[in-house]
Every structure is written in C-alpha cells, then in structure tokens.
Image 1 (cartoon, rainbow, N blue to C red):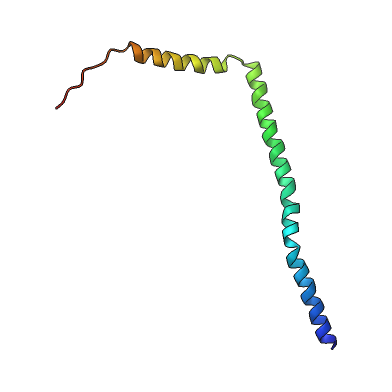
Image 2 (image 1 turned 90 degrees about the horizontal axis):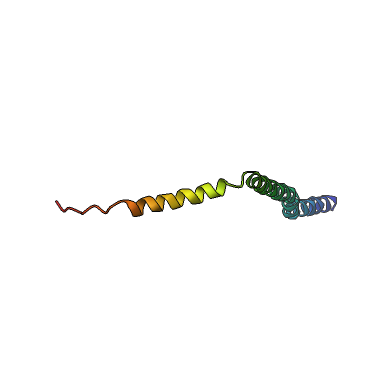
Length: 83
C-alpha cells in the first residue's frame, strides 16, 4: 500500500513539474523581451541624435538622387542597332 502511495506521489510531482515548464519559459523570456525593447529604443534614440547633430546628411542623399536623374536626362539617347 505504501509503495502505491509513494509511486502516485512521485507521479503527481513529476506531472506538476512538467506542467509548470510553460510558466518557466514565459518567466525566462520576459526579461529578454524587455532588454531587447530597451536596446531597440536606445539605438533609435542614438540615430535620431546623430541626425540632429548632422542635419545635412539626408539632404546629400536627396541631392545625389536628383543629380543622377539630371545626368540621365542630359545624356542623348543612343540609337539601337540590330545585329
């Protein structure tokens, strides 16, 4: 009789331990998500601060795109020859 009770007790403990593994996963991953979010915000804040200090960085990109399109318009079209 004692063996049956002991076996049932061990089985119940093992079943509870297995069912709590999902809770353990959520407890472990929650801090990781918080750290990831904080790091993401820090990077975005740093990028915004750099853009504020160097404001003409975006203008250069726009000017380069415009000058490229101007160059394409200025080049004469070459006639296509067929072999």
